[in-house]
Image (tube, rainbow, N blue to C red; front, top):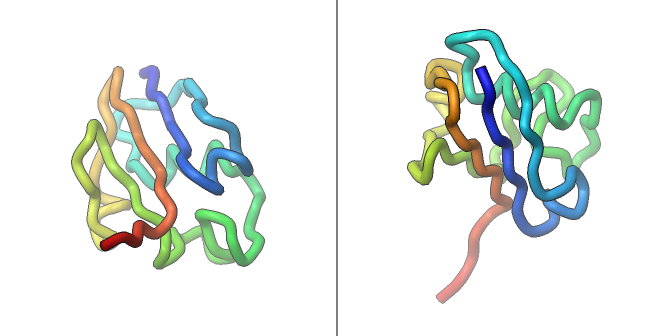
Length: 91
């Protein structure tokens, strides 16, 4: 299945703006992000040294936020778009 993974702000500078990747059916959203960031486990990477999503990273699937405790249980479908954001601040 084909999935788009898009990065924003400093993640965009690090990983590029968008990646179209092929994944097997029922791939968790976190696995899609892992495939794009590969072995990057630096402190400011999206993924930590154990392969988990860093606390400060925000994932969205088709415009809807995916909570941290769901990143391994939300499965992607063909044509989905994953967005990866750094922390959002504002006022």
